[in-house]
Length: 93
Image 1 (cartoon, rainbow, N blue to C red):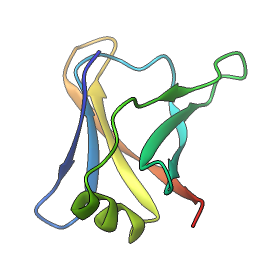
Image 2 (cartoon, helix red, strand yellow):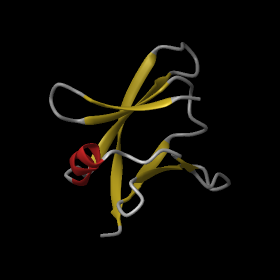
Image 3 (cartoon, one colour):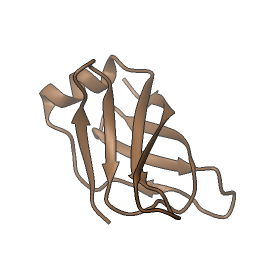
Image 4 (cartoon, helix red, strand yellow):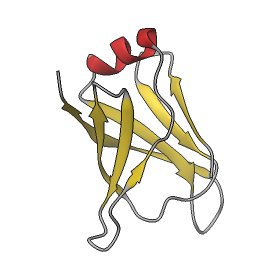
């Protein structure tokens, strides 16, 4: 699965996935010190997915100004892209 971070024309940030995620994203945790995202799902048995690439400084500054992000992923039934907002929780200094 590939996940890319993008910015929409209105300034919102979006995580765009090329495959369906294992469950609805309950929240996105952003670890400021490490500049990493963790996707936390609405599934108690799934611990979440840590994104394994560090954000560049200029992108990290944009993320620090947000309280939510858009998740875009293919619909499991149709394969068409669908999007929804998820809370962005900032962790660290």
